[in-house]
Amino acid sequence: MYSPGWFFFNVEAREADGWELSRNNRFTHSEAHIRTEAARCGLDVLAVESCVPRREHSAPVAGFAVALCKPA
Image 1 (cartoon, rainbow, N blue to C red):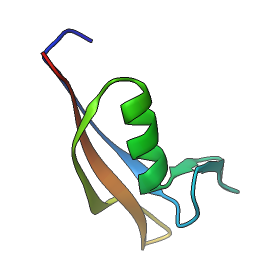
Image 2 (image 1 turned 90 degrees about the horizontal axis):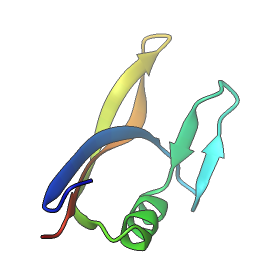
Image 3 (image 1 turned 45 degrees about the vertical axis):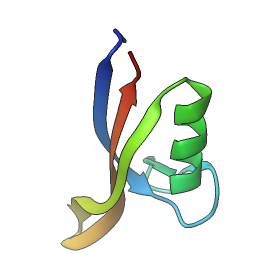
Image 4 (image 1 turned 90 degrees about the vertical axis):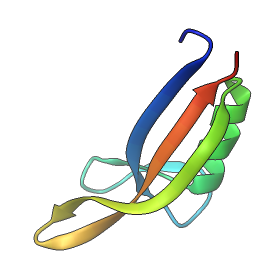
């Protein structure tokens, strides 16, 4: 990623710390894990907001919309 650079994405949320491959073969991530890994990669966290990235069997799936940046 070039400096300055921005990275926007969404993920499914996980209540417990860390990440997990769920029973329906989708990765879930905790907010703490997102923040820890962003810092480890030298990225600043601009925002981590709760969202609904998709629905499964008409039910909302909890997630996070994430904005990271690589400082100049």
